Length: 266
Image (cartoon, rainbow, N blue to C red):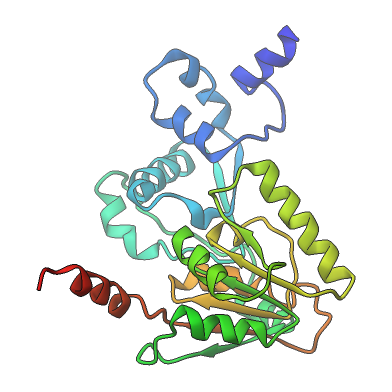
C-alpha cells in the first residue's frame, strides 16, 4: 500500500492516469505535496481528454503553462476531443505570459477530411425568431418513440417533464447523485436496445463521456461545441442512414417577463 501511495503522490511510473484538476493543481500550487511531482512532466506526453471542458476563466494561464512546458521542458501536449476548442485566437494574450504563445499543430494532415465518413446526422436549425415554449417542445417530443432533449438548466428540464403527459419519461441532470444517473442511463440503454418507448430529458451532463444512441435529438441553443457534443448522441452507432438533430431557441425571456409583470402591484 505504501508503494502504491508513493506512486500516486510522486507520479513515479511510466504511465499516469489522473484528472485535469490534479494536473492543474500541481502546476499552479505552492505546496510541496503537489509540487514534488512536477519534474515528471519533463520529456513527457500529456493527453487532455475532453479538452473543451477546461474552465474559461483558467484557459489563458493553463495554456501559458502548457506552452512553457512544451517549449522549455520538451513536453508534448495533446488535446483529444471530438469538439476541438479554438484557442488560436488567444495567441497574443498568452504571449504576455509565455514567449511562445499558443500555436498548436494538427497531428494528422487534412483533419476535416476525416469527418466526411462520420456524417451520421443532419442538423436542422430552427429560427431563433420562432422561440419554442415548453408546451410546444413537449408536443414535438411526444411524436417520437425514442428521442433525447438537452436543455441548459435543471429547471428547464423539470419544466418540460411537467408538460409531457407520460409517466415513463426519464430525466438526467446534475441534481441527481452519480448512482442515480447510472441507473437512469442503464434503463435508457435497455429501452433503446429493446426498441421500447424512451423519451429522455437531460442537461449538459449527458454531452461528454456518455455512450448513448438516439435517432432524434433536440438541443436548445448553446455554444457550438455543446451542440456538436449533443450531435454525438444521435445515430452514434451509425445504424440509421442519418439521424436528426433539431436546434431550437427557448421561449424564456417572454415567459420570465410575463411572470414579473403578473407580480407587479396594480
